[in-house]
Amino acid sequence: MEKNIKGQFLDLVRSRYSCRSYQPASVEQEKLDYIMECVRLAPSACNKQPWRFRVVSNEEDRRKLCHCYNREWLTSMRNCARASLALVKTRKRQF
Image 1 (cartoon, rainbow, N blue to C red):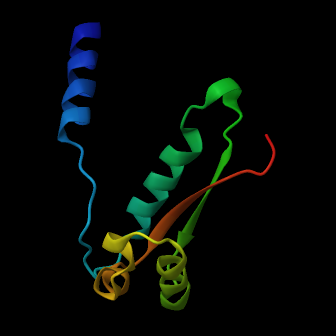
Image 2: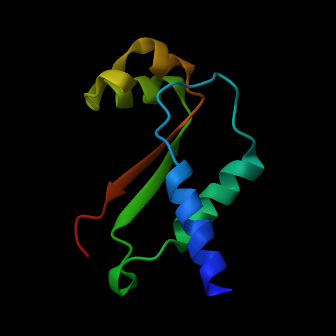
């Protein structure tokens, strides 16, 4: 059984990709809740969880975010305008 789990994890890692194109379709609340629950339960060293996650769905706030995060693939207004939301990870100031 352990070998099967390792194989499944390896398949998952091999199949991952970084999305660089977004659709204007909204994300269903059920899916967003599932993602946020996974984030909440994600392991960290000593369970410190030195991060915060925020959902940015307001169009003006997404544009501000795209403007301050200087990555060409994100800052192009086409990509920024198309995304229906952004999931932002930040670090805690103190652990």
